[in-house]
Length: 405
Image (tube, rainbow, N blue to C red; front, side):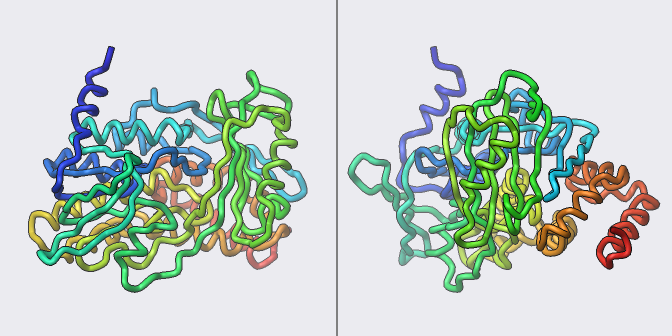
């Protein structure tokens, strides 16, 4: 028997010739933009290709659940601690002081698309082909649903949410800004039954080791029945599969069955411009809305999708293309300081194993642990404890200038 949501989704699938907005890509950013625009009463078509799952550790902070009305039932697991592994194999355990939610993108993303459809967006499973300009100023969006013919819909504005290698960005932007990224690869493997000597289903393990990644990090993130084991690097020729094997061996997961493998570029810095000055705006990985240092993308993709929805709604109401610029401006106003600090961290601490060793040692500090997790869970720098901030500043400075071994 069909649920009410399934029946509503099915009724949305007929493709009309014209919409207000086309959202290309149905990950967290695109699905959020589509849902919020549909809830505002706009006619939206959400186009997403079949079988697309991004490699992702799957961590989401509690603030995401609150801000985007995601029920805890959508989490595959909750973790309460994190283990930092240094090049020397020194391990530092950090108590989160709450929980970090874990999602499986192969389950979470489809749910976000279903929710957008339930809010009124037309969800079409199809492969985007191209944008074509119309003489009347609109845009034709062409896509292939796999039935042997190309479909075309006319829209006023396009939201490009089709990943780091965005075809929307390639076609709509006359100037192509070079996107900084690492290539991420992970394997989803079956989790052990309960806790073992080297694996805890309530703990995320993060590897800061040059042999795992010369310029980023590796992860072992439990998702309940499955676990994501992955790494990222921008160094050509570096074996990410080899890095994953190291972590699987160290975690006692070497013989656990592989459910799937995925790889994709992971942006490390927001692009300077998210709109084309006319009728296209980017969100999520297509806009580079991923946190430096951590590579966290789900929350920031959804945040960019929300800001884009606001900007697109203003554009549709006024016809003023300048409104689209506000998506990036509002996003950066909310997250610029955190992104700047994380960028400095990555540039300095990930540059050598000697510095990675010191970085993991810093993570042993109670002040660092408390303020790090406060900032992560709430997505802002906590100013409630200025004395602790001062202590962290001087401790970090001592490491930077070599006064502390």
